[in-house]
Image (tube, rainbow over all chains, first blue to last red; front, side, top):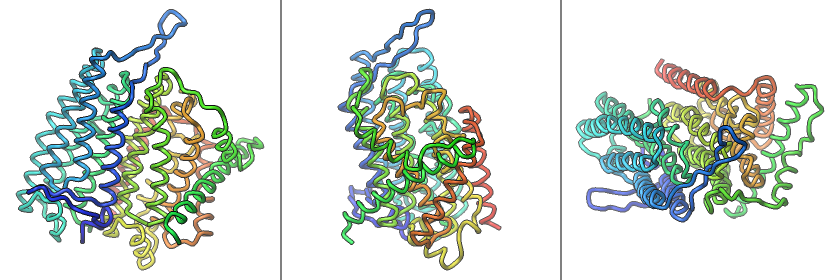
Length: 226
Length: 283
């Protein structure tokens, strides 16, 4: 089996010492999508959230102040760039570092909001993300121990899957799920989206889903079909 | 055929056939509910009408993000046509396209500043947690066939028979996903009438309807290609009409579920589908 089977033919590689970035149509599409959304976030203003006022017939506009706007925009751009990097890296350890960076900046994007409910949600997500770090790095370490490499281009050439590789993959997936706050950990994360500041919230969802899609590619590279 | 001409032709077919199928779905639903219903070309006419109408932008919107998000929706479904009928590329790429579709759906809701759009956005996050696992049943196809390339999956089916028969639970899961994306579906919580159609209320409807038509065509195309395979254009058309009519029956007879029930039903079906399919593959 060849790595080109999964995401299409390899269009090119960029060797950076031990770290090799590779581009298939799949990786390139997600890389381009992450960069396009990041660029949009960088140039967009935030929404003004309209809320009904209790006891009157008036509406209330909730706006993001300038200091908060600058901080959240910076974190969102870092998150977008980390997501784009995670889409094309061919190195498992490099991928885990990108995922943890995404987890950290995602907490920061929401933690900058001065609302108790939102801060509570960010705190709970932070706890899950921190706990998720252990299986994430543990899984990657087990895959390294069982295959002797963290290069995906090397792992794809191994024709078999050992039980340790499978166990490492399960831990790795649990770690990614915790870091990105997807199901079954998504409940607190959905609360975070109620806060105003539309384009910055985009990157939280974008990074989670793209990382999950890329993780599926990585897991299919490690674990061979029946 | 020239690649650009091939893309244009396929995008046009996807848009026209998708629009007519969505109109057909409304017609079938109306007849079941003892109403005459709109003409079958109504969805197509609406799309053109919205392109010609004056555009208005809420002053609370996040600009230019608010405008770009609808263009992004069109781009990703045109990309899906290129990956599908034009080049018969990787299923994994479809998975990525679908994930970005969910992101766009979420952000279309949040970018307007409307409370209805915001609720639609929160529901999109919930539903992504259920729909993405449903889409991930495509992994079952990889485990069965050893490939993610569409042309190779069709070749596999020519030799071993339709995947619909060998991994029926995976086909059922994908059908639930198709059902989720159909208008008036029991799972269409992001566009529920209780939240005034969610993100669809304020956005540029022409672009949204254009994307909706192509996405409907593409989801049916993937289902027929991946689970039946090797069909000619007439076979595709008949298959699409049958699935659309079946979906219309379900939608006409089922109310929209509340968000919690919708997500839990989808997650349960995804769990049954994935575990059941793996057991079927092992034994």
